[in-house]
Image (cartoon, rainbow, N blue to C red; front, side, top):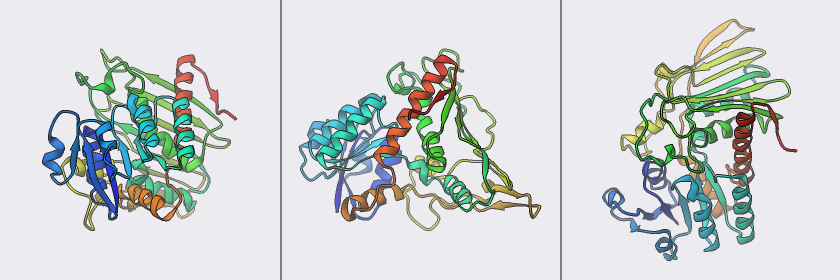
Length: 345
């Protein structure tokens, strides 16, 4: 049994980590760091509650530490945990700079500890379906991949750290890591990047929309997010030489977790047939709904468990996490200078 300590019990810790960890065989949610409120005690009465990272690290029973705190604390907290000999999971984004990411990777290697980033959206059902579709070459050679993360939040959230002018704030560092990680998992790092990172809402202090283009030799990946999409478009659009695939709707796991449901049972992660994507193939002149594979965020933590106990390969490697940070910085550079920037060789 691996004992896990969760640092932070805000939206990410409460919604995306605690219920997943506590429902993976072989993992025990040993401790939670919640600085002031008592929400964790009410939801997890058998779990130890600490008020600081230092208190948690004094608990020698904790094998793995999950950091789900504001982005600008990721590097410092992860470094403390690695220096104390703990395996570390960092919620996305990995850090606020690629320099910090490289330093953490080197530290983890020197300490002989696992370091990974919580890219749970790899286990969204719609992305798993897209991954299978591209892997099976159902559309032939892809020429255009488009991925949207559209929301409608016209009002600013007073006091929300994600909307303050701080390192790692803004939608690029919030939603960008998901879309960038998925694109590079499918196609690898691009040859070049062009991005428009901007503010759309009145009074916003940090970016709340972006359009990113990844350039590949014979294809493009378009990654987009906005907080002002009252009517959402497709989540995924893929065009290939042999056909197209269009998918609406979001993976149901987030809404289920927000409602307090636990990830268990045969129906977990199963999407309504109404949201299945449309596959259209040129050769057969067919147009049909393609069933969405059931998503399951537990797979991330199952892989972490097996990497520690059985020396299985990590699903989300430090190199992949670093590449996301590099891409984020290139997006900032491209948007700032209004130009296409090459991927570093």
